[in-house]
Image (tube, rainbow, N blue to C red):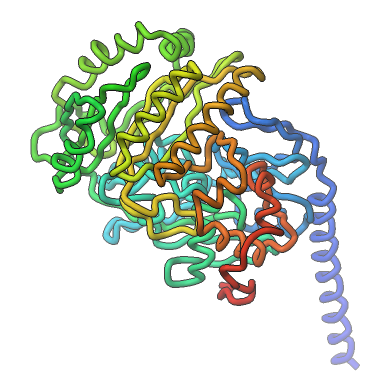
Length: 500
């Protein structure tokens, strides 16, 4: 009798525990399912994109992200610090996962030179962790304000002459798919997810974790050379590309005539440092800086002052600094400041090396006719990109980063759209491509023309996200191609992945 009583008590306790757990998860599901999808209005960093009413949630754990996705059924958008400008971070009435607090360092191996981080961490935060160990990020963007997840989602690149895009420094990622399942992916494991999510603009799932390669934080010496634009190509091939000591490179192409460049290279050196700082301080800008930048974008006189006086003085002094110091600048240092009436924005184009002069001639004509307010154009080199289903660099290319002033009114928007359409056509005619995470008013046909392998990505998205949950304004623009018009170039059923 006592034995039966004990069994009864155990069964009763089990029922109570199961009931409590069930009630808890039911309440959580109700909580997530009844969120007000109009509770927050979101926009990108410039404030010029279409604003969206949505529900903003800031998860801090991987399980929270999974619970939010599985407990809801509508569209989901993902963002870090809102710097993608092409509509990749917003969608009307969506569950908006703001990962800016999802920023922990999970593992750090100084001997293997590897670091594993949550995807909402910024490059600046990583630099603060690794710099005391005299290590540096192998590949990152030009500025350290971005999050790792955002950089991976656009497969960004920096000024690294030989290393290419960020995907080349990623050992593995961890991703949550629309069904809530989580996978580890690398070039050798679940490779379709790896090459689809990196550079996938948030269309496949949530990248929650990444393991990244690090390198030594070596001293670098700056060298500069002023050139005419038609001298640049030969100079670069002979003095930068063939010099193994060059680590970082960028050239400034000056408006309004776009006839001369300042070539800036950073080379390995054994010379003593001229600046003992470890990392740059990213302070708030003074009130007058936004006004000055606006005037510089519009004034021919100030353009000439920048080219002939300010930059030669700024870059002319001897400089030997650590790799971390040179790569720890913020977007503000590049002029990305917004005011109530206008903002600095950016577009980027990848142009084959042998078409450099032709593209410069075309952009000079386009900007002149449209009286575009161009702040400056930054030129870097990007080797052929063999990774990523939406890889933009299918040959050795120069990257043209066009920084321009855009007003927050319809007239300015229409003007930028007009010259952008012409610039997209000019890049295509030069066998180049327009980079996608910026304001580019391209058609789906132009997307296919520029990225002939995009059909492979669309097919992957259809397989892993059959209910089209991961949306944003960028993918909405090409929705028909994603879910109706894509050619079946890749057949990857969801159950082919190896779940952890």
